Length: 174
Ligand code: AMP
Image (tube, rainbow, N blue to C red):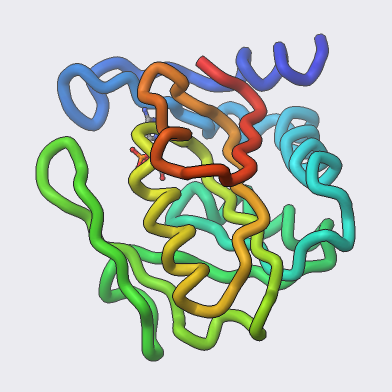
């Protein structure tokens, strides 16, 4: 089976989770399959090229699982973006709209050296609000956003339109 088919096969759609009308993309079967998980990590690293990136930003929580091995293979550092109130030191924060209500995410103010080239990694790009807020946090902390890599892009929600001319790389688009 080629990698894209394997990845699609290992993503489980869960209807009406966490609320009615949402089809949740459950990546736990993919994470449990070494060939699929390793293929995802290698594809992200190959897309950007080793040496091109200084820091990998992972978005809480499933983004961490993908971002950490990507950072290891790039020879780059890992920086977490977390929900408000979870990071212990001084932070920048960004608030963005969800379908109902708002969400606030944070990053440590000293996460980067000036001019660090930063790749943002998450599991799913949906409306793009989370990724746009993470990109803004990177810029405010002095990093240069080199791109966004996601495992799954929900193209019908057009998250890319919130991300300007950012290099958006998705392994599967639905
Ligand atoms: P958004 O800000 O709308 O692009 O949503 C992206 C964030 O919400 C990511 O961190 C995802 O983990 C999560 N997310 C949004 N929609 C889904 C979905 N259908 N299945 C799984 N995770 C999702």
